[in-house]
Length: 316
Length: 280
Image (cartoon, rainbow over all chains, first blue to last red; front, side):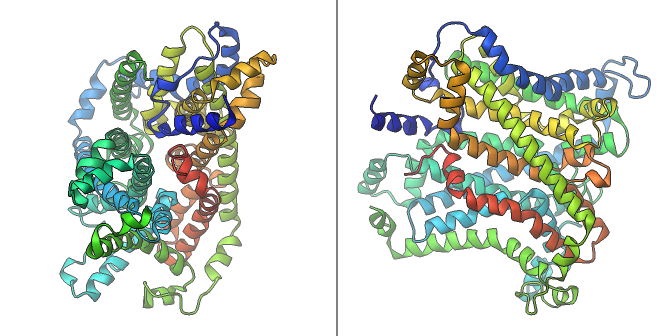
């Protein structure tokens, strides 16, 4: 292989990386012979660490969920019963479901913005770099800044009053009806950036002749987005949806802790915050362990099935 | 090419595209501008006008923070934690990824699936048993304990992506090295790692951002005030100094700064590495 083709090859091969170690079309096995002993040496540290942080806690928390939190006696599904009977838990689930509204919003916005930048409007590189900025801002920082901006006397209300829209001004995070939606807005602000950059990068790999053909056929901008870009990018869109979905169901703890601490009342409680506050504020490990176990079983079952299917198709 | 594309949707199209891009940019920047400009204001100046530039900028907020030994301890803790756990996590994960990508051994596929399945597991689901183990092993309230947890948590994700990178290296290089008498360790060190630098840098940045920004593990496992991280400190600091908003904003500005520098210095790597150098 000449150096030129070898570079071309690696570039080619790296293209679909974000989709994962994913498409095994170019996967290679340099050494066919069994090298079990050497492999053990390479893997031992990872197995020990993963065992300590994942495997052991998974087993331990499931056992804890079946025990009485005080006596440690086996109580079967009692903790689970108590969990589902807890109204705060029900509120938490409901709030996580409300947050799912963020998913279509960020996907649509990211697609439109990526397509706009992809059209190489003047200064698109600068736009891209600036639009990406929120993603490097720590959630804690974003949440603390928005915590001020959304206050009764904060920037948002100041601007609304300036525009003579006083009737809209209120305590965005302090009002139980708007708190969860304000939180959702902060999540959009920070998570959108990754989608734009991800989609834009993938668009630059799409064959341009498709767009030329669409234009010759008289397709307008929206039609090109809808009928050329979206179908061509279905894999990466699905990937992004997956990440955002996981984030909305199980990675919003930072936002909640900093912005609202679950309040006012239980209006912004989410599943994660429920586990945290039950276990570490109220010292009730029973309900918290039961909920942790449910999360683990659901996530691991879903991932396991998905990966096994991929493995059978030979694309893992 | 580019000019053809830019102008093909007409003047109205171009204007609305710019309008959209500017709107998105403003939405991204205004909160950050608010943070930065407020951090240079006095409390009085902030009360007078929240949106204006600091008309008589003051460094008072920064000076008092950087003269505060507690704040400096938080920064130090965050640096130690981030550097150590990223170094350990990346090393351990790249060794494992090499085994998954380039070695043939019994149980490879099931073990790989077991690793990758952990990708979606939220740390909150593991925190109860981890907390108990940390208490029992006296690793609670120690940076070492937190480093172990952070490094462990980043392994599934990091291993998964690096496995993808290693698999795509040109197979001929491996064969050549093998003919030269290189063992797996030699191939790993001289070929796999150097050729995967874009991937390693990207994952290094992603993991650095993650540890620096992490809050849950930081507040549960590092509760003693001399072990707090910057993020945990700032979250609590908000409670203590709730009225002095410029001081809080100065703290936040300092917290963003290292990540901003990292972003600028790795911008090219980051935007490209994220999608595997798709851009020419």
